[in-house]
Amino acid sequence: MPRLFLMFNHTFTLIQQESARRELGVDAILEPPLELRRRWANIPPEEPSLRLWLQPMRDWLADRAQPGDYLLIQGDFGACYLMVRFALERNLIPVYATTERHAHEEHLGDGRVRLEHTFDHVRFRRYGE
Image (spheres, rainbow, N blue to C red):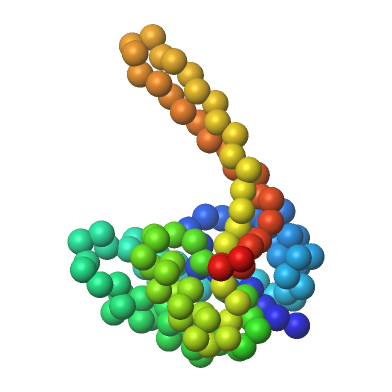
């Protein structure tokens, strides 16, 4: 059975876990080590290229992921693009989570506006589809 590797900045919810098992047919969900999760969450905006920054992520996946495994990729747009290409080159299946967004807007007495967003998981979608 395929596995799902996470490159994701948020908590992977129980609803998402159940969805991944049902929709994707995965039997295991694997997070990178804490050092790599922190690296993914802190992509440096000043770097002209992310290739070296992402190398530890690519190395971790190259050592563990097999063709047909899924890779959930969400985060910095440029980093996502590079990791989707990496996944496709190695016959991994890159996916992202789709959500339904609910917004609540509150007008504060001092003229400011407070905006709160709530997201509900809907499904996983393959990149390019």
